[in-house]
Structure formats: C-alpha cells, structure tokens
Length: 317
Image (cartoon, rainbow, N blue to C red; front, side, top):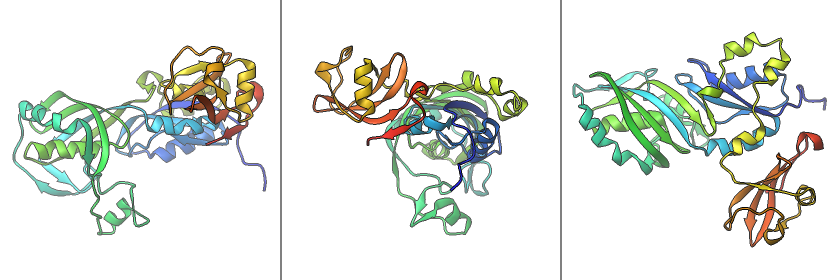
C-alpha cells in the first residue's frame, strides 16, 4: 500500500458552519485546505444549523469523544402552529394548530424538560434501526417508532418572543440531546405543535464563537500556510475540563512504556483523585497522555506523543 496522502498535522480548528453545508463536507474541505492526513469533527450539525463545528486533525481525533461528551450551548427559534416531518423547516407540514401559548405558558413548560430526561429522537435522524438509518426509512415511507433515549438538559431559557408565531430559546445541554425534539416537545407541552425554524450552536466544550472562523475565510487563506497553522488550537484544548497532573521525565517515560504509577509516589500530586477518575498527564506543559485511577495507581489509557517525541499515538484502553 502507498503512503496515505496528507501531512501529519495535529490540532483543533473551530469552524463557524454556514447554512446548507453538511458537517462531513466541512471536514473534507478543511482537510484539503490544510493538506492533513487525518481529520474528523466533534459533533454533527445538520445542514439547517449554523455555528460551532470543531474539526480535529491528527492526534486531536483521539480526543473527539471528550468533545462529544462535553457541554454544548444552542440558540433556536421555535415556530409555533406547525408540526413537520423533520421537526424543522425543511420537512412537510403534517399537523397545524391555532393555539399560540403565552410567554408564561412557555416558561411553565420548561422545568419538565430540564435535567436527566427521556427524549424521543426525530425520525429524521442518523440513528440506526435494524442496520438502517432512521432518516432513510422515513424517506422511504417507513418511519420507525423510535423509543425514548436518555438525555441531559442543563437549562432552557426563553430569551425573545418576536411575534406570536415565534419564540427564541437558549439551551445548555450534554450529550444525546436533539434540539429538534426539544423544540417539538416544548410546543406539545403547551398544547400546540411546532418545529425549529432557526438553529445555531454557540458553544461546544471549550470552543465558542470567539474561536471560530468560516470556511469562506479559510479559503481566502488557502495559499498562506502560516496563516492556516495559526488558526489551529492545541490537541489538549479538548481536554480542558480534565484535571492535569505534572509528571517528572521518569514518570512520563514510564507512562509512555505502558507502565502504571503509584499515586503515592507521584512527585507533584496536587489533587486528590477518586477511583475511576481520568487525569491528564503532562510533562513540561506538554500533554503526555490520559490515565485512569485504579486501585491507587495511575494506569495509562491513551498516550499522545508530543512533537519532540514524534507522532506515535498509543492506545492502552
């Protein structure tokens, strides 16, 4: 087999995704612009949605699960009075209602949708049913009956009411929450129907709008390698919420060889981790890897070789 095309580029690019562009299309374009060997993204955004789409290059792809699990923030506009097949404005109208809830009714419906909830995903979603995508079944006229799934919603706030047909909400949520389902359920809880008319993700883990750049601006920098490289954020950015533990050179080397370390012997233990906790191991400010606390020891679960040690990635999980 020949060498895989592209360069060994590591880091995160925070893209401000525009309307009517798929998340995979964004990743493919960014990979071509950076001539990167490997790329992925930290959480799909529908073509209808805009906002924060973190793109991972190289070793950063190994930290995608931490971005997928991270807290996210959204702002969406609920259109009241119409239920649509896709739970957004792209679908066909299937049900209408003349009832328009007041602001007080909308706010009163929100507490039941906050916390650890069970949520029915949109039929037009990428979930698999007997090996087939739910949206493929729906398009074929065989929409599946999807069961409720666990989801975590931290907060929902009604922030604007432009007119009687529209209500704007801001949401903070964890993994597994469908904003289209949330909008649908707010309307249903108020005795009417509705769908998402506008959706934007404003934050995804440590990444927000202050870090983001549009694809159009990326294209403008296409022939400026230094300008492109300056847009990348470190691999470790995705792990900002994971406590860091400073390692000596000897301790870092032991982890690189797959050896566990006694917590009692760690030279710079400044925290009191609990059984099962995941910690960052760092040496001289560079990310060495991720470790899990097990039976009083730090056991490496993934090692990220820093640039001064080469590009090798080792997974001990």
